[in-house]
Image (tube, rainbow, N blue to C red; front, side, top):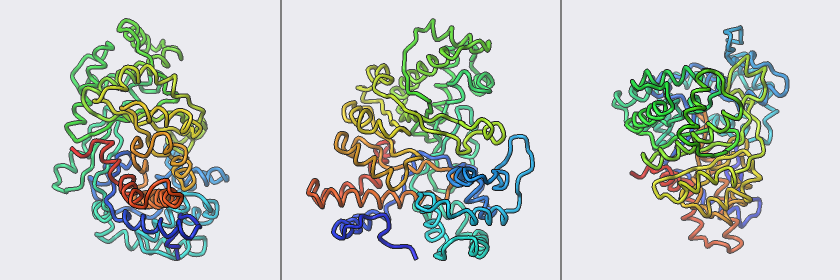
Length: 468
């Protein structure tokens, strides 16, 4: 049986107030402004096929841990790029997961999984090798019921809005299907043009050509390329998008002259771009995207400090997003100065910063957000969206930036069923953090209750301009 006071402070007084704070926000609607749930799930509203396909195959939190202990990704049903053989029996995949579930002791993934079993499926039995098949059968039976289909769960989870992440050339057909179906769930696209901004990425030139085909514009020049991106942003906005998303290794920004930008673009089209060309082109594109956001109102999200696809063998065999992204040291103050000096004081512009480098929280990010009107801090990104990671973030950021220069919470997940438990964990952690501040008379209890609601709900709505 799960403890009702899980994740709260062990101090009795702080724990009692944390419980009250949590109860005041636990049933607030969920704002999910940044995540990676496939919109096809909600467009088709088909029953989930089986527990393995639901919990394991799409969740790199799960299979990266098992891989670290020598469990082949093939045995977990993770598809190979070459179409080679992988385990197809969901029961065997599930049993393998159960046999190694002890690896998740003390991790947020272990907490989330057990909370999902209890909250979504009403299963309190401890999960492990001996209980795996009983739990599998119970989940499988429930997945066949109408109340466990995606749209029904969306409503049961009290999701007020869910934003997906979509490439600049995505057809948005699933969003169109959702809109035309008459279902009232609010599912919005997010414009992610990374494939168009990285001139050394495989398939970059084809992405540029596809932009031209979709927009009817000549993307053979840099000017036409920019016009095509602007036109695609307008399409996303027409389908309700409120934000863009950009991932970079370093948040370096630099504004090139029109002649320089055109020259780098031309070299890239010929396959002659250098590493320095790529660095400066991405830096300039961040400036362009900031300009576009100031003009069209889309909130700009910037993720920095992740060395993508570090394990080359896994990347070549299974593709991207397979748990191989590793944090690197990241510098923001100098790298972002060009962008912030041009747009950081513009009331039309909003930039949300995310990082995997915790050392920057108090040294750079909180001071930047505590000064520039355009800047907000995103919540701890995936390596740190954990109990201790969230607490470290709050402690390092709040004194300098307060909570009102932060973006509230987003779940940043591909695993649909993990959404409510991730929000619940964060609401519990924030309740404990605020209760501690109140116990030390840094804030009043009345302020703590108001701040709890802001962190759980209101900040995400206002940061992403979902209030209309």
